[in-house]
Amino acid sequence: MKQRNRGMILALIPFALMVLAFQLVPVLSMLTGSFRREDGTGFTLGNYLHALQSAYYMQAIKNSLFISLSSSLIGIAVGLICAYCITRFTPAVRDRLLMLSNMTSNFAGVPLAFAYIILLGNNGIFTLLFKQWGWSVFSDFNLYSWSGLVLVYVYFQVPLALLLLYPSFYGIREQWREAAALLGAGPWQFWKSIGLPILAPAIFGTLGILFANAMGAYATAYALVGGNYNLLAVRIGSLVAGDVVNQPEMGSTLAVLLALSTLLAVYLNHRMVKRAERFRPGRLRSRRSKAMH
Image (cartoon, rainbow, N blue to C red; front, side, top):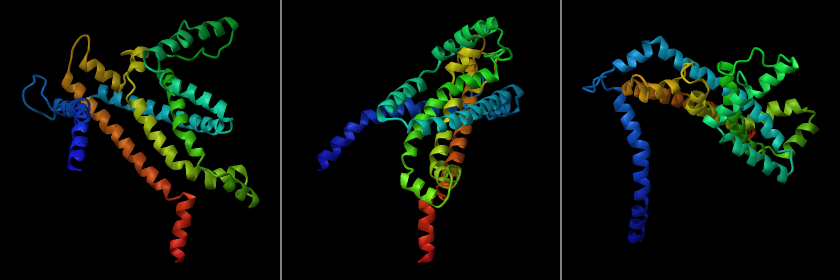
């Protein structure tokens, strides 16, 4: 038995080394680098003070938070509707749609930005086509602005939300619908009182994942707007591997702030999930039975 346990421990050593090399060491390097002086000697809190007092860096943080929150809310709303619709199809159609959603959720980065530039850029196919037809659909739309970034982000946020949400709809039993209908409840009353409380933990959990996914998106935003739009991920990349001046200590500082904002969002999301679970029908019934006894 001891030899078996020893063999299992030895088998886990490569995995532990991989986690150490690709997870812990970069995080420790980022943390220590954020306190390093510009000349590389000694430690200081000046990097954080400079980042929080700089209007330029604070604008990058606000833009990233606003775009991430907007694309996450749109993605969760559209993904929730699509996830419900996909459960209404036959298994064969559902599997094909899920496969397509899986491919779409992974289609991001430079190829996605290039595809949008071809379709909706200043000289894009749809832009020129609608202009030739006299349609003013995209006359005021600018792909290289806030609205363009949100549209591109939503493209990979919606299928990801769909993949994460659709299993939750199978937790809603058909007997509950029938019981609600017999008691005179309409569809809206059923979803308000039973359906949404059951789905609330999954919705909040998915929202946190979408927010973190949007906050960390770099390649898509960089390929689409470059340095023309001030985003936190793009600013970190320019500080670490810029063409003019490299400031790795400031890049590490902004990376720590990005990680803290994402962790804070995940924590708040976790609290909302715990709070939403209290109002699930099963939890309410168990509490009432305990109170009666």
